[in-house]
Length: 327
Image: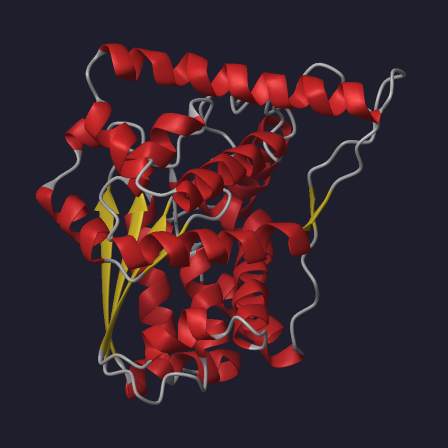
């Protein structure tokens, strides 16, 4: 906190402000916009949520490495250079989690190009400090920091709004087009218009990455989200029918203006294969369900989402905690 001339009372007040806002997210909208250009707000977010987010990413990536689908990531690590993007990555929580999981698994990798994308410019200084602390490799984050000795890490922060792709710089577009792995961790939770964001992200991706990205998210969500759905009287069949109708009507309501505006190229691109459509519908279902969009036929009683962060190994937990204390 001393690095940014922020006092503990400031962080404490900002933490309460964040908690009250995030508890009232409704249909992807916050009751008031959070200004992450202010350092006290940034530090409050770090101390409240950073460990949970970094732990979530670390555990999910480790799960993939240890699963039958490990080739999804190991095939990428066999290359000399790996391009990774963290969309809505803010201070680099997801980056820290990824490095934690990557430890001891990058023997053949030479260059790691890391890009954090966020619309809030205030996160850039925090991300820069995060990289500096990790490079030192001191104390409990010695293992994570050792990656900087084994691999050439090239970090970049890009200020960009995922919703307004017409304002994206050439660097942003080029990074997304050349990315090998894209992380999208809870970036849609407070975005009301999710479909345009997904289209903006998917459109530039190269074909092989499209599959890798969706498979990664499939692994991430079910194992870390606990949801209890209670149906109103009327039977399961009726509720499922209403839910499917809700999804279909929402999707085509959003899609129709694009058709009228002759954006057929984007539609045909996504419709190139049956499986592409299947994945797209499924992810849209996940995005809306886990962000508070409830269709007719469902009640909100007992509904999550409840994100659970399974305990990390002690050395990984110490790494994240020491990193937070340095902020």
